[in-house]
Length: 179
Image 1 (cartoon, rainbow, N blue to C red):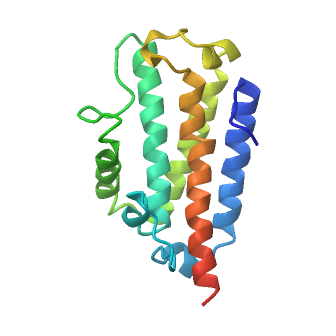
Image 2 (image 1 turned 135 degrees about the vertical axis):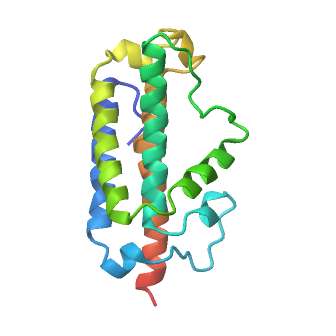
């Protein structure tokens, strides 16, 4: 499926990719859910391949990006100008922000992480539903979005991020199931 460019596609893609992610998770054994992520001979260049150690870490990453979006939209709609990324970070240093998210949740249980991501996904989709197609996918509707569209942020924090998570889990499961 191509990257969503309409409200209908955004919501459909977010929900269908989320369901696919949960299909993968629901088919994992308890030991796979609680196991350490391994990728065999694959060595990814991106920092996240070494950062995320287990399923909980992946779910927390998704949750934290949902929260970035929810807080950013809520703040700016309320008239309190705020950037998308956490204060102190920019698009060159957001990898460090992701590490901070990881560090902040080392005591979060897998069950709690599942509850958090289920709830935050619902909130993101509900928020997207409040905007019109033009508000989501026309440029210059909201000055605080910059040169992009609000919808592109929703796509990035939902369906695109879910693809990222599924890729990691599939690589992991391929290795542990082929032993």
